Length: 117
Image 1 (cartoon, rainbow, N blue to C red):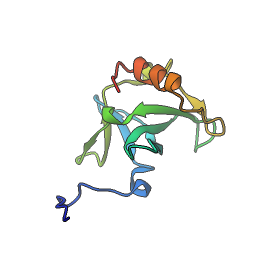
Image 2 (tube, rainbow, N blue to C red):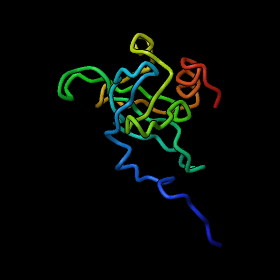
Image 3 (cartoon, rainbow, N blue to C red):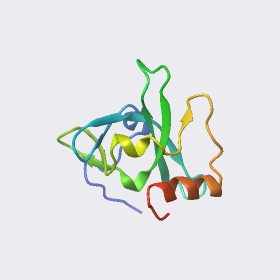
Image 4 (cartoon, rainbow, N blue to C red):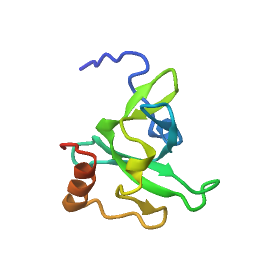
């Protein structure tokens, strides 16, 4: 079986990590720190946004539902329909305190952003 791909449709997770994330107004929110992948389906479920702190210290991680992110070639980064204020109460964790991605946590994250899974 041969699969035809349009050039540039596929990307290594290594290239996604570190990519800037902007809100719809063009403000940089942070960058992608990690990707959370569903083991069974192979689909990316979350891009973990690194936000806050200084020079990587004291930054928090915010799991954003992957289907919220849209790649913008002019910014060479992802755009999400949220602003910095929305992140104030968003589910987050410290780098060394990764949560267990249980169905309850999944519901909490997706519910916060008004996303259906």
